[in-house]
Every structure is written in structure tokens, then in C-alpha cells.
Amino acid sequence: MARLATISPTLAPVAVRDMLDRSAIGALEIPRPPLDHLPYRDFVHALLRAPGFKLDFNRLEPDAALALASDQLFGRGAYLRERALLAADIGALANLAEGLVGARASVTIRTYFAPGDLVWHVDRIEERAGFRLLWPLGRPAGMRVTPADNIDAPIHRAYLRREHPLLGRLDTQVLRSGAAVEALWAHRPAQLAAMMSGRFPFLVDPEREIEVTTGAASIHRAETPAQTGTYHRSSWTNRHAPGLQVVITVTSDSR
Image (cartoon, rainbow, N blue to C red; front, side, top):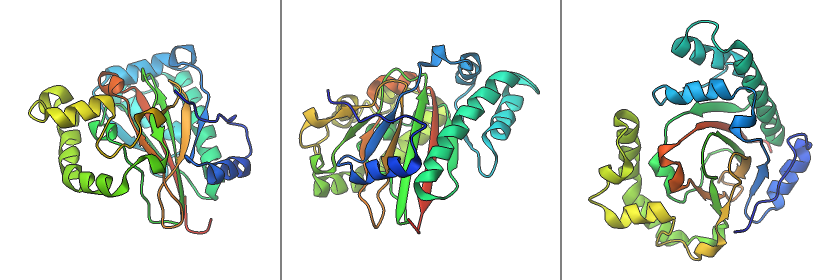
């Protein structure tokens, strides 16, 4: 399987933006150590043992947002050193993303699996430029990406018109009940088989799928009025081990 081009997290944002703008697939990989090699692994594993949740940092800095989650879940002052180190790494990635468009990043973390992510899709935003940086900690498989010309757009649009409301309902069911996707959609074997394999009717050539290295971060283009987006999906392998997903989004109307 092909691999994405990799960049250093210390590369100048203007160089990263140029690579993303010129890339046919619109995605780059940032190598990261495996979770169990990181100094905050105990904190992350503790978060993963808690019930699944999503936390939007809003205007909070990463250290304040992680303190909020940690204090509520484990008591005031727990994991002080570990959460400070994790916050510093999230902050560094957010700074890189912010440099792509010259605007403040929106940061979210979540610890549950959204089965709708198993379907090939692009992230769509209204502004002229937008990018999303994803950093999964503790997931057993990397995200998949594919070039836009490997998706039959009319079939894809028709598929999502039919399936999008059902996928949204499925995401909610999984979050609220923790039930297995296989059980919830056992009555839809064709759709379930496509989610398992990634081989949907709109995918032209399955051999043109590219896997992000397990544990690595990645940046991809969002679809906007001025730029094409990157088609991506999660791996079926992650459904029972969603890990801690750090999602950093940047948008701008000026760049």
C-alpha cells in the first residue's frame, strides 16, 4: 500500500501549506511515537477507560481544557505532569495548523468511535481555506485516504443523500448505548460489508487507497468553495479501540 509524504512538525507552516496546495491527494503525515512510548501514556489510558466522551476546547488553551476533563473524571490535581505534557504536544500541533491559514485553531478531543467515519467522505466548510489535523492516540490502525478522482462523485452524492441521516442516527446509537455496529446494522448486510472493507459502490479502484501510519498525525484539506477536499475514512479495525482522537481544524476567508 502506498504511503503519504511525511513532514516534520517543525517545518515552517508556509512550506506545509505549499505542499498541501500542490498535493494531488491533499494530505500529509506527521510521524509520532506510539502511545506507549509517550510520557503521558498513563493519563491517556485512564481517559480511554472512562465512558466515551467528546470535549470541545472552545476558547480554552489545551492545558486548561485537559485540566477540566481530568478534574471531572479523576479528581482535582490528578495526572498534573502527564496532562501538561500532552497539552504541550497538542498546542504545538495546533500552532502548526494555525500557521497554514493565519487563524486560531478549533480543537476537540473524543474517545468514542463514530461508525459514520467508516464511509469515504470529505470535510466541508464555508470559508475559502480549511484544513484538519488528526492525531489518534491508541488506535490500532491508521486513517485511509484516496484521491478525489478515485471517487465517482455522482454515485457518492446519491449514496450520501440516502445514507447520511442513517449514519448520523447510527453514530448517536453507538455513543449512547455502546452497542456494536455489527449488531445495530445486522439488518443491513450490504452496507455493513462495505463499512468493514471500505469498498463502496462509488470507489473506483480499491488499490488506490493510502493508509496513514498507525499512531501518526495527519493534515488534510477540507472541501471549500476554493479548494478540493481529501476523501478519507476510518478503519474497521478501530471500531472497538477508538483511542483518543485529537481533532484540530483551521479555517480562513482570507487565505
